[in-house]
Length: 326
Image (tube, rainbow, N blue to C red; front, side):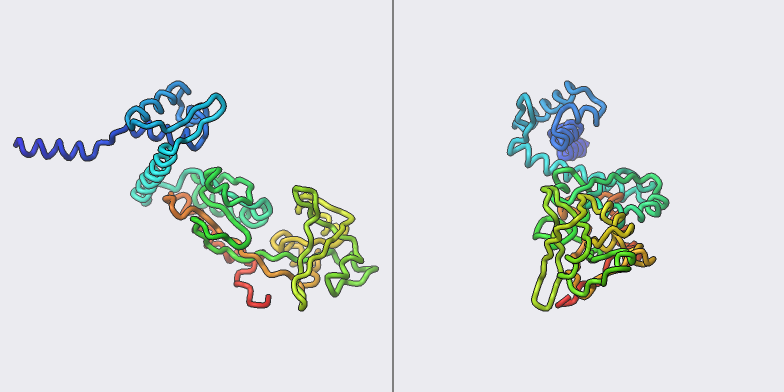
């Protein structure tokens, strides 16, 4: 009997944590949110209670996890390592709970998605009603961004990246290929000939996109001689491609826009696609997410749904890889 009791005690000690799990969860939230006040709101605690939880955790571990100043909080080297492992452990625990209850519980929770603004408007948004009809307890939070670093900086679950991806700790799932096209309303050519080469665009009114620094985005084409960039020196400019698309449909001039922005207008004849043989090589679009992070069920459902909707994306994105020479 004594031997059995000792064995039970040994098992209990083996499974005991040297820290309070609740304090560790508060620490992870403080590190992610960057302040005691924000963490207090998320945990329905007072800032003082959050501070005491961090103090207890540091005392239990015997190390300083946070460097506090009057203006900001910073993770120490030990705090950074502890945060990374704790966050992963809690993610794994949540994933295990979701998998265990997958057959009995509806998919719920928030999926935070980073999207380039135009891609979100024209490609992802039309797919969301069907997703939420299947999973009414799921919530979607969209963050407009084109920076891959925001996956980590903003705590995003998944993002869409356009263009070649650098080697990184991200998993990439291909969605298709985005194409820039040159378009104009048929009315633009009632009194002027359609351009047959990129250089002839300069004889028409041009509508150009302006970068955040105020410079015009040049129009890029491929020719037998190589890549050609046209500096548009446009008569009408905008920093919003929604405006450019609307003005192009209204017959104001020629524009160079993503295919998914104008695909419907091309299909119904309101816009004409020009200089197709000179179009630039399509750029890949990918779903990306951290390779090292545990994937909650809600995120997996979102990713699987978007990938399963490729047939719906075919009307606005090229699905096959560009051939050499394209």
